[in-house]
Image 1 (tube, one colour):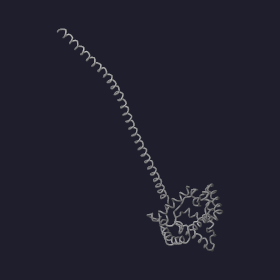
Image 2 (cartoon, helix red, strand yellow):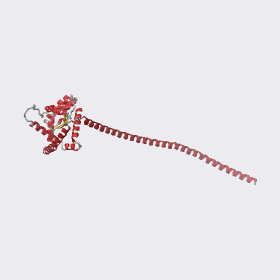
Image 3 (tube, helix red, strand yellow):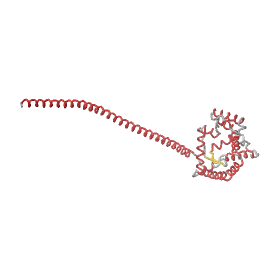
Image 4 (spheres, helix red, strand yellow):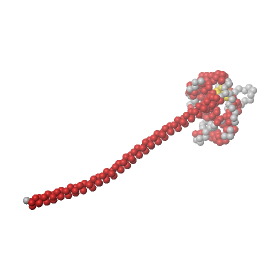
Length: 306
């Protein structure tokens, strides 16, 4: 009996040891797997953190770029608005300056003469110019305008020289030679169309203004319209430089029929090439007389400064 118990006891002990060994082996195999998994988790965590950090930095950079773009757009809009405001302020200052500088002691007479010229234009000149345009095509009318403009070469040439605008005087000479020859006595303007030689309009009133002579009181002339004392005086030398002007000595009893006839042709032809211009100008004005007066003085001041 004792031998049997001893043998069975040994068998149980051996089996127990075998089981214990297998368990320890499985535990040893699981341990490296756990270490590997922990290491992989530790490796993935920094990558995840880095990815999240990169995405956050990219988001921040995109926000900064969008903020910068918005700031640039706002700044550009502000610059455009400031430029527009500056232009408007400059225009208003020029307009107010012109209004303040106009001397108009003859306003009562000027208003009456403006009304007379207005009726003359609307009741006489415009209907004649409309009928003339209906009969004569635009091309011949433009040729008439070019012809008379070419004849005014001495007026432009002399006044450009008096203001030391030598380049302009030279271009006027080239224009006159080109248009008189190629342009068939000035009926056509090849100097401008072919060679880009622009006219340089100058008169004696601009020359006096160039030397500092003031405009003087505003004056509205019959038929001729708005003027001032300086420009009215300038009609005399300008008339002598105009080949179609009136140059008869004072006191001579001969009529001026030819000169007035040419003046009428030039005026009617000019109005026929600008249909509706006077009516639209009058329509936009609240008070027509000061509008014409200030517009004329601004135009003359600008021409003198150029």
